[in-house]
Length: 171
Image 1 (cartoon, rainbow, N blue to C red):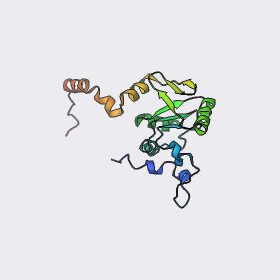
Image 2 (image 1 turned 45 degrees about the vertical axis):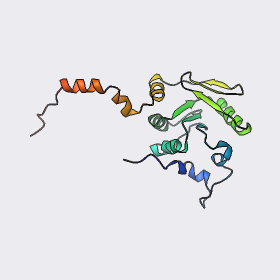
Image 3 (image 1 turned 90 degrees about the vertical axis):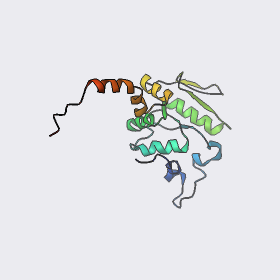
Image 4 (image 1 turned 60 degrees about the horizontal axis):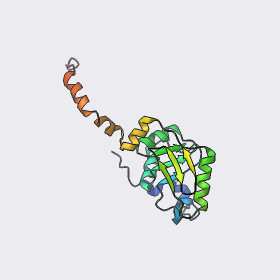
């Protein structure tokens, strides 16, 4: 099984580093003020071209738990949920306003509340987002596909005990 760690170092690698491999101080994630951020504010169609789970593993390993954008590539968004990352869709204007505030406000803090499906800051910004109830439940409970299945372990065992596998396929 492929380990999911060690990918954060390579997140946005071609943008974060020069061709010599040195950090580019102009790139936003290399700036000390964003060190330790767990919410990424991105542009539209975020994750396009990143259909492999490695892209999400890099985000998680770097420390991101939430990505806010005006739209997401479908496969990428699905991989996010499977790896415990919340994707929040806001309008282009709302996403741009959050990015602008993050760039111009010292110690800027964004709060994402999955219980109430809101994004807010301490400067008066508030936006609602929608998420399907199943995905919301899985993220709130920290459930991946295996964890979700294990919630029904007793029912599965009961079914298997009463439905023996036919052995006619064995020769």
